[in-house]
Amino acid sequence: MKTSELLEQISNGNRINSKEDIALKNDFKKIFYGNGYMAWRKKQETGSGGSFNVERDLLLKSYVQERAAQVASEFVEDALQDVYELALQHLNARLYGVVDNFAAWKHDSGFPLKDSALELYNKVCDILENGDEIRKHRIILILGVYAEGSLSQARKSFAGSGGELVLEALLQSRGMKKNIDYCTQFTSEGSDTDIVIPKATKPEEVKAYIAVQISSNDRTRLTTSELVPGQRNYFVSFNGCSASSKTTDDIGDEIIAKYVKEDILYVVTEKERIRAINTSLKRLEAEKNKSKQDRNKILFGETRLKWLDEKSITFEDFIEQVSRL
DNA sequence: ATAGAGAGACCTGGCTAGTG
DNA sequence: CACTAGCCAGGTCTCTCTAT
View 1: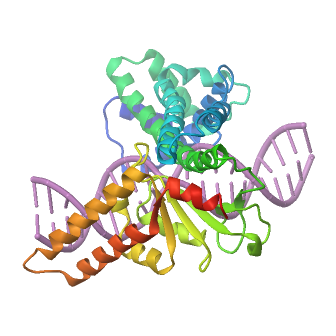
View 2 (view 1 turned 60 degrees about the vertical axis):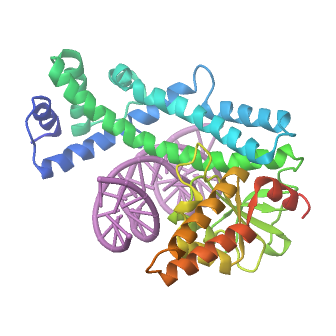
View 3 (view 1 turned 180 degrees about the vertical axis):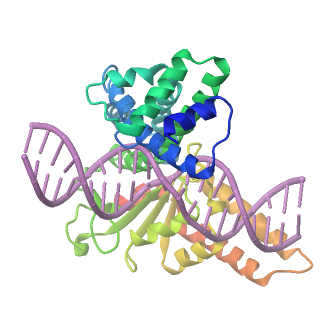
């Protein structure tokens, strides 16, 4: 059966089998992703009001210029929140406008659909325009699923670059200059390092390696390929910030043990550092007070505390250290 | 200059299994 | 039931390279 007919089935409340479902999904992917509808909507944004990138640059520039005196932990928390809210503003518009703009897409000069994906698209438009309420609802639900599929990925992407940019803004607000005092995407063995200090072209010139993450849990392990054993390594995490979905507690024991061994410094906000120390202290005490103690858990708990105590630093400490390198 | 392909990095958000 | 640890798919974004 054609995918447009499958959609007809669904709109009428009928079921389709799994093979048909795969075919349908394939065409919906062509409609929404890659060079599809979502990309077209994104292009519309650049028209009035300026693009997301322009607005974000302006926002960060204002932080650099106006907040040089703000406590670093608060600086990054505020900046990240603002940057993330700006991103959500753009992305939400892409989601909430999907029903209103979907049919207009076909008038775009670069409209790419053909064959069965095109037929499916036309079927969607037809139901949106002529279908009765219940059929429309069923179709709109599906549009939402694909739109959100795109947006959830865009959020990750924006968040990732946002974190790096916020840290750059912090460095700049303290008078450090890009491509002099620091540089980004330094290429060495392993993957590129987000930021190194100072500007370097060869590993011998690097005084500190810095990896940045917004929400760090098990993915923390990925940062080790950006850092270099034996060198001064900073792992900057926005864990605990309101724009982050994770906290220090989400970093597993084994990963922390590795970080202790490799002497990697953990940079977080002051608030999160204090909270994390308290939490792990309580957890360790709770384990020790059990009648049947888990020896491993106690050891890991002690390692975690030691790491937080000796190897975690606040953004204030971080700035102080790197500006003196 | 511009378009397109390819590669690498980004991380959210939800799931399963295990423990108490 | 409540909570935690561990796990990971996959579109977007950006950059680089190549072709026109």
